[in-house]
Amino acid sequence: NAGVTQTPKFRVLKTGQSMTLLCAQDMNHEYMYWYRQDPGMGLRLIHYSVGEGTTAKGEVPDGYNVSRLKKQNFLLGLESAAPSQTSVYFCASSYGRRGGETQYFGPGTRLLVL
Amino acid sequence: GNSVTQMEGPVTLSEEAFLTINCTYTATGYPSLFWYVQYPGEGLQLLLKATKADDKGSNKGFEATYRKETTSFHLEKGSVQVSDSAVYFCALSERALNFGKGTSLLVTP
Image (tube, rainbow over all chains, first blue to last red; front, side, top):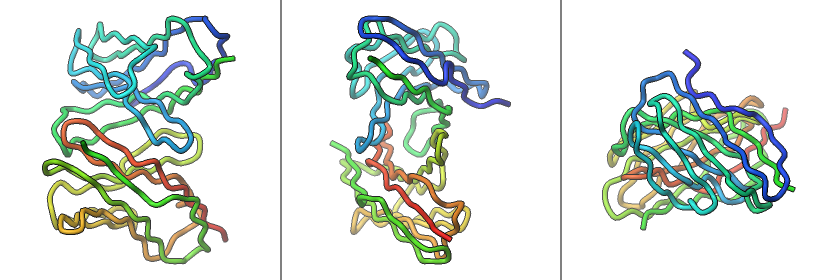
């Protein structure tokens, strides 16, 4: 039982390049989330998914797209990377989304955009 | 809207000192409250939670009580260890999980 895994762990991009971050969970959770963590800002929700084939915008969705083609995977895409997207990205999953549900986090992807 | 405010860090303590990290919240309804911990180089993991007023969450010697009257969920530990050095996040959940900005704790031998 690996929990939540993320690939890659670290990536350097040039401005304008694209990339996809992969999140996988083996807990059969319905809900999955993408957050970004910036110094002094806590974690901010980018996009989330309430089930296979569904996605929704979070607090800071601009410049990102997501897809949930399989229940266990949640992909975060950057079509044209910008230096403002330099951050640490965390994926999380939960069984449901009622208040009180614990979210389980991956180890993070550190992205540097030059 | 919902929000969480937690004390600014960094907090530096000597081993075996008493720890308090303050957390207050603003919510329109009846949220659940959480403390997550992030050890260096890792993702967040749940430390403890409370789902209704007056509930006390506890884990690994840490405690926090859901105080509706003061809208607070302060984290406490009676005797910290070097291994407790980490960043601690207070969070609330109604529909979405709202995090505070985090408090960095450094415990020195």
